[in-house]
Length: 337
Image (cartoon, rainbow, N blue to C red; front, side, top):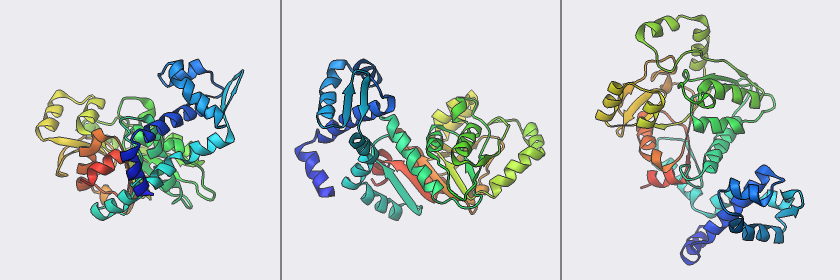
C-alpha cells in the first residue's frame, strides 16, 4: 500500500489535496448539520461557488443529503469521517515511521498522526484523540494522572472517556500560566475528570512565585496533598513548547527572556527551559513537578505537534523523560532526518 501512495504522489500529486478538500467539507457539514451553503462556506472560509461542486459530488455519491432545512451527513458519509485518518495512516508510511522512531529515540512507543498541527486545527485534535486512547486503555482501579497545561493537553481532555471499573484521579503538574483559562492545568484536570467520571485535585498557586512565598506555600496542607499525589502518579501527560513562545505566555521579565535567548533555549516543559543539547538554562520558580520527580516510575506520555516545534521536541527528548511519544507527521519526518 505504501508503494501505491508513492506512485500516486508522483503521477496524481493533487489527489490527496482533492481528498482532503472533500473530507473537510464533509466534516464541516457533520459538525454543524443541518447547515446551509452560505453558513458552510463561511465556516470553511470559501465562497459558495467554490464549495458547490464538492457538495454536488458528495450528494451524488450519497455521502450527504441536501434538504430544504440544510445539509446532513448520511451514515455512509459518517463512516468515511470516522475512518479517513486511519486509512491515510495505513496507506502512507506513518506506521513505518513509528517503527523507525522507536529504534532511533529513547522511547518505548511512538504514535504518528497525519498532517502538521501548524497548518490544521484538526491535526491537534487527532493528537489529542490518539493520546487519550493510549491513556484510557491503560486505566485500571484508581490511577493518578498528572497533567500539564497547554492547548495540546486541552485537546487530549476533549477525547478522554470513562473506563468501566476505573476511577482516575487527575492532578495538575503546575499552577496556572495566567493566560487562557481553558489551557491551564487546573481547568484541563477538571475537564478530564468530568469526561472520565473520575476525580480531581487542584493546585491554587500562580505558575511563577517568589522564593519566600514558594517556601511558605510548600507547607500548606492542601498543596502538600496535591504534591503527594504527584509523587504517586501512574501517568504524566504533557506537551512541549517553544522556549520564547512559552516565555511570552508567562509574561516573563525582560531580563529572564534575555537569559533564555543568550543561552540558546529552544524548548520548555514543566517550567524548565533547555537548549538543543538538552541542557537546562532556566527554571521557573513554582510549585509543581521537579526534575527529580521526572525521573520516577510514572509512565510519561509526551504529546506535541507542529513543524514550528521541531527543535523544541528534539531537545526535550535529550533533556527529559518520555515513554510514549505522540506527534504529527511534520515532526516525525524532522526527527528521522
